Length: 491
Image 1 (cartoon, one colour):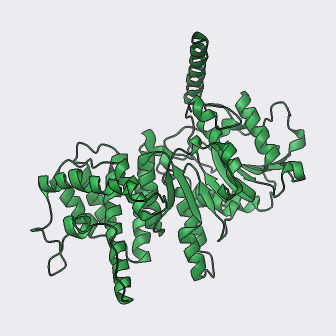
Image 2 (cartoon, one colour; image 1 turned 30 degrees about the vertical axis):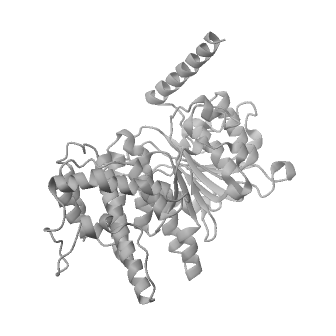
Image 3 (cartoon, rainbow, N blue to C red; image 1 turned 90 degrees about the vertical axis):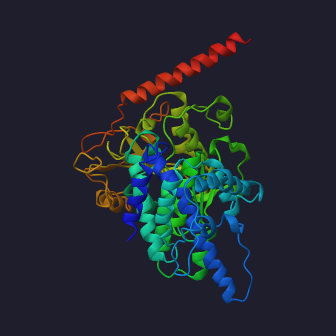
């Protein structure tokens, strides 16, 4: 029902000089979708209050509500184009009044988890790139025909929005960092098995794909009570995201999946000092695909015991620290992590093996991530209830599974759920097969903690680096050398 509407919106955006990429299309669609959703939400809450004989206090002042400036209605319920702004009047109102008013919500509350705070952050983080007020009017007319009232409508909208995020990822450039293949996410969730009442966390949430899929998984569990549904809405899913566009997409994605006020913080997770983490800050389940190849500044590295410029390695330390005793995690990382010989990689493998139970490693083939030549693995690990010092068990055996889908994957034949059925099934008992095997940690070299072992049935976990990865490492080493030389020069 809504697919043609989304197509019309994209067609209109392609005419705009300020919108040149799939990222732009998703961003501009997102802020408009959010305001339409907010209007539907307020309308529903106002009607509920009226039925209970209670007054309703609107979040937005009347001039800034969707039904006033975007879609005032006539007696027949159609948009009254005699009252609706258009052309330069619409463009100037949006840029000079609407965004200024909405961004001001940042100062209205200190509570990050309120819808008011999220309004302020969203409209402080992005801007209107639609230069033509007439194009904007066409898009608004299309979006006004969308409805967020029923679960069926939200489900269809969420699928269309997911398709936009996927297209953004497939388009390359930085879009790919926002999209983890959903079949891979679903397989990770089936292994980790979150439960109602547990807190699920992604500290590098991107488009919130992990949190959305975890919500769908838990929402579909049998015999949920009203209290369970409320818990899923308000006290289960938590995320952090540094980039403004990704933050906006995450909020909209979770809303479309059915969470009214997502617990997503707009922050750089890595600025948090791990020494300050207390038990109340930890989570039962962690699901994540942290960014690869980033180079973090020295002051960021000071927050971690193992100092490294590699963003993904810092995130892995963060996740280990943020996992509760008895908690479970599944984290995507470059497969070179299994064998890199630099001090940070060796120290991090040692930390993971000795402080957690790394029970499963899923080796993913090239093409798993569209638009990226990197090979990845998924690390599945638990945090012992007792610390190792108090008698808790660290890693004793690691079960490896080398995923082979039997074809070259690409945009036209991506990873699908059927590709991962064998992995999920065998992982339940750590069964050995032609694609899976177990390794006793006592046999691992204690100097290198190298995990790139050969498959006894033939083949091995391939850890050859791509030219891009090699160039990234050279760039990182050059940066470190420059910092050392600068330090010497300043003495």
